[in-house]
Image (cartoon, rainbow, N blue to C red; front, side, top):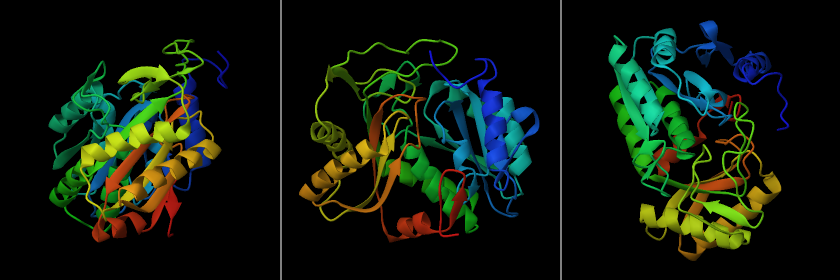
Length: 329
């Protein structure tokens, strides 16, 4: 195992310290590094909190800032944060308008965020993300997994929160964006969790895992490696089938890398997906391309499509300033 680390037990601590130092104008760490929060809070707005196991950077800490999250709770690598972390984050960033938890549908995250919500003695609500069309159940979850679509929910709901929308409105908006969003991914290699010291799964040089999750968990099936257009076709067609979009529908397209795929290849995938969308009369009017919801150094990517409308696009385009995403400021 070759990794830029000092010791497997200190990876998260040292990474969080480095992240906070690099982006000290945007974020600060909570006590005992339980959470990352916005350095400057906006009073009177609903506080947005998300989190999950580390190893998916920049999700979630990289999306803390103006126009997205108020706080993010990092667990150990691929391990849910604890209810105490979530409770501490909520108490730190709530300015009186309530707290909205944005939670990926994984068993550990669901259980711990629910416990935190029950313990929190202030108004709160939860949005559950389950955009992965690949499998209904896995080792990590019951029902569809929450994957790269989480970014879109955090962004659009975060933009609405900046405008002062109510907790009830934001909760409903998050649910609506989740229902309009679908994702599917493919892995060309495994990833290596530092504490394990070896790849999560073994895969042949001429194989790929279709429908993989963001923890390296298996997908629909293992198949022989093929070209980008055929990979894009399977991923995109499954996403479009799930959304049942009509011709003329405008969408936001996210082509997300899993950590080990260069932008050169991701843009090849963007090109291939564009051809497919154009062929069925779907218009990608906004794009995001890059490694935003990763699985350590796993090679591969996911395709996310979100059906949009003018009001959602207005929120998407509004000013945003986080460590990983920023525009319009």
